[in-house]
Length: 344
Image (cartoon, rainbow, N blue to C red):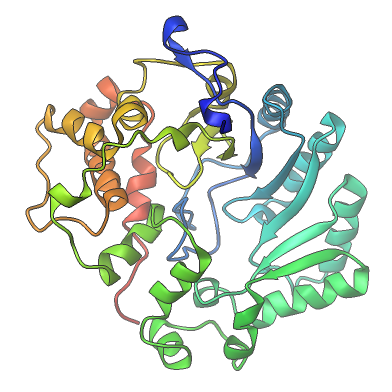
């Protein structure tokens, strides 16, 4: 039976828990030098929240181990924006006995004079591999020469790395500057945005909801009301962030303390989460309609898009959110609808 259906606690005790944590990513920050179209977490240069603190890192480690997780990857945002903070996080994970699969980066720092020294410091702290982004989305912000430069530095230093996604290197390495959307369309295809997102297999949430809105036809509301419970909201594959919050895999914009995911999520505390967990998108729609939500007459591209827009509406008004929906982050929804241009 899948982890999130394993009974550690349930209706009788008034709470739910993740069965066990696995495939966990630690988001060291939300700030990023890029604002990629596909970003599920709506990271950008405009995002605040700071960098994960020592106290937050230690609390995260405690809860990860309690939840059965002993390996993670580190991402953001862009974790290298605060290298001292990154080193401290790596060292804290090491002391806790949690291994690091890789650290994600868009390689914006590859030409810094101390780039090789950073790799040495990371190795000494306990990390030994990078996931280096090189794809059409990042290419709008970071020239492809930089991830290729960082890969070269890793090879010279004997530091592990892989390029995500390497298949785009040949097409995107023909210029030294970042690309505009129009330039990428000419270099790849007119639908490179949708094709790239589809090939990634990413859920079209966060800022990526705009990709689905642009490239997928709307469907009638009735065809989107799958009443299947969204039990994957408590799957062991998840992210935890700078604030030690649990973020369900693929369903960003919902967050509650990691401590509750591990030790018990109180039933009734998070109405939008409860509605989805028990009744899926149809349950969330009923919940929102009771608060005067009106669905778009033209429909939505998918049930996930409908879900996103309901949640965005639920927390768009401060009084609605504060009174009823503490699990919804209004900054996430506001940032998700920014930084996506239909033109160059």
